[in-house]
Amino acid sequence: MGNPTAAMLVIGDEILSGRTRDTNTNHLATQLTGRGIRLCEARVVADDHAAIVAALNALRGAYDHVFTSGGIGPTHDDITADAVAAAFGVGIDVRDDAHEILKAHYQRTGLELNAMRLRMARIPEGAVLIDNPISAAPGFTLGNVHVMAGVPAIFEAMVASVLPGLTGGDPLLSQMIDVPRGEGEIAQALKDLAGKYPALSFGSYPYQRNGAYGTQLVVRGTDAGLLAAAMVELASLAGAA
Amino acid sequence: MGNPTAAMLVIGDEILSGRTRDTNTNHLATQLTGRGIRLCEARVVADDHAAIVAALNALRGAYDHVFTSGGIGPTHDDITADAVAAAFGVGIDVRDDAHEILKAHYQRTGLELNAMRLRMARIPEGAVLIDNPISAAPGFTLGNVHVMAGVPAIFEAMVASVLPGLTGGDPLLSQMIDVPRGEGEIAQALKDLAGKYPALSFGSYPYQRNGAYGTQLVVRGTDAGLLAAAMVELASLAGAA
Image (spheres, rainbow over the protein chains, first blue to last red):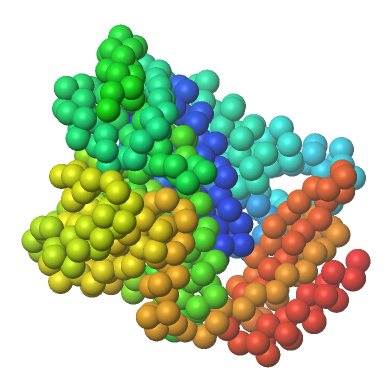
């Protein structure tokens, strides 16, 4: 299916230590699905230069888009921008337009634009800034890599400003049906259906509720007609013994 | 720091479509941290044989342990066990001990152990079973790869049975202090401290609460004395202008 592809790269020790739950991947996944862009892989790496560079180079070569989250703040462990520059083999320095954005923000808030905060104006050569309507410090797009903040509210605002500029694909449609029986009982019929509709993907998600087994069946694809036909067959599967 | 290392591999289209939030990575991260095992990387891949095999081989070569979540149920898209066998280049078939476990479970519950459910007794050659106290179908350990269910309650039970058998490291200690000022204001002092205590890692997490900026500072390491010394300095940082 010719939909554009994407990967997510979450950067941050706090996710890997368990201190913080990553919510950005789920948000991005939902947004991309809505635009017909297929999220194919997600990775979490530590605040480690070599690890970030290696992941960036693997992902940007394999997918149409890479979205990153985290590591673009003012502190010593915010090293994402430098890692992106290294991955692309380009220079990085404080850039005038980003500097102006920070100056205006700190004048407005009465805080000092000190040397560490100025690090947030370091932008790799050739990048296009991504607006940050919440705390000013911009993200950026370089090639097919979109570099965004880790704070969820800022990440989400940046995703909202990046997505309209990307070429989407046919919307990825999905439909769900709840079947009051165990996954193993309907697995053969589901396999047969999956074989009959190779353009659709069939997922099954077992649950137990009040002691009874049930399964949620989810069908995904881009062809609304096929999807409707498959749902009719699934519904009869749900009703049949 | 000589702690054992680990990676997490989450397998499942439903995470990448945004339908389901992965909670297993956070659970594993917390449990590993408590045992002094360092979670260095996490990946999410689709229900795709080649993608699972490639990720398994990359991760099992790079880290002491790999934990997987998802894809070991009875349906056609549960392909993790076959992918693990392929990654290790070993055979896979229904194994007697796993078969007996399923037989007993389905006799007890009065359900039929049909051909699709029997797929859950397919175990790669040389693997050791992981107990599933909830729905019987076992996970398994092959080499340094621990293959577990995606359903969170089952994943967590399997982690609980695997972890005591692994060699841990010095406990990864952490302490946190809440500083009522912006991340950018304390970034330079934090950088200086990080330089003074190279054996510790310093993380800073900005927040905004009732309109006021603040920062949570987290220090991590295995040396309790160093950690205490750094916290004294951080506390004075929190109090100073």
